[in-house]
Length: 331
Ligand SMILES: Cc1cc2nc3c(=O)[nH]c(=O)nc-3n(C[C@H](O)[C@H](O)[C@H](O)COP(=O)(O)OP(=O)(O)OC[C@H]3O[C@@H](n4cnc5c(N)ncnc54)[C@H](O)[C@@H]3O)c2cc1C
Image 1 (tube, rainbow, N blue to C red):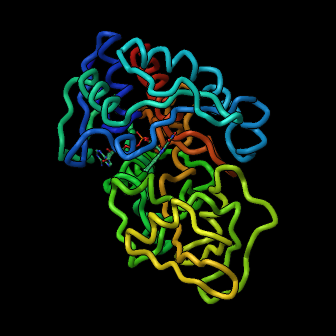
Image 2 (tube, protein in one colour):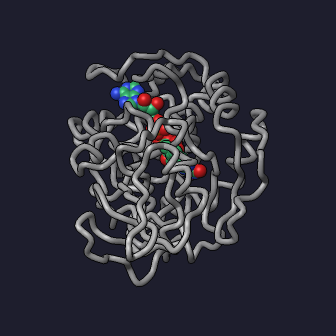
């Protein structure tokens, strides 16, 4: 059976590879100039919360059925990745709260792109696309970042095309369409290139006092281990203030960021950046889009996984990509 897959990120590539394994003929359409989507730019830790109760507690607004699917399937699905030849660079996440694997993002992209078969670059999904169709276009981080005046820390092509396509066909969406997973980065004039997305993340916010751009203190009483909550708080511009410098601050300074000594301490001018959206299309546990016949969705085109908190976008892409492929293949 011919199947169209829109998007050559983690979700689209794994789905296509699995469809081929199951004897089908997927064609992957990719809007951008390269395969890999945000996977290619990522730290590539594919993880889940160690304890089911922590997943629920940390992402309380998410759909319990999707969360359980990811939590229960991830171990086997990492085994599937390794059966394709993926070699972990770490066999754990180095975080006692989570479990998973870390891969080399370029090597994993190359492996998955080869396994996915036909990937047509610079070929966006068209309105007249035939079904079955899997939407794996990476949510709408570009659009959300623009609307909020934030930076984009993701592949540059994910603008909500999958969401719009499905909405025009009656799809249902989840809550949390204003939520995002993001990081705090050095503010301009710092130059933040794609290859700087990981090393320039200002990940010491738990030890910092936080001030608005006009110097009103907004330090929260508690900060989550992943600091995603600080990305929401910081918004377009803020200041982190610490007692002494660290490697991340020196990297910000070297990139041209503003680091100044003030009475309050060493101040770093920072800005929030959107990595991926949290709300999106509503799907069932076979990744079928609710309300739109013949459409499946995977990866961060799907909403309702990490609402209210933070979970692995790559695990969401891997598990839902495989679930979608298996559901399409089952007919
Ligand atoms: C710097 C960074 C670090 C990260 N680190 C981690 C990490 O360690 N662990 C983790 O779990 N997650 C991490 N993430 C998040 C993770 O990479 C993403 O959540 C995940 O890759 C999303 O996969 P996806 O396939 O759903 O979407 P994407 O990777 O966004 O892929 C979507 C693809 O669809 C294409 N597309 C868009 N519109 C169209 C269209 N109209 N037609 C055809 N194609 C289209 C895009 O060009 C893109 O290639 C990180 C992300 C970044 C940027």
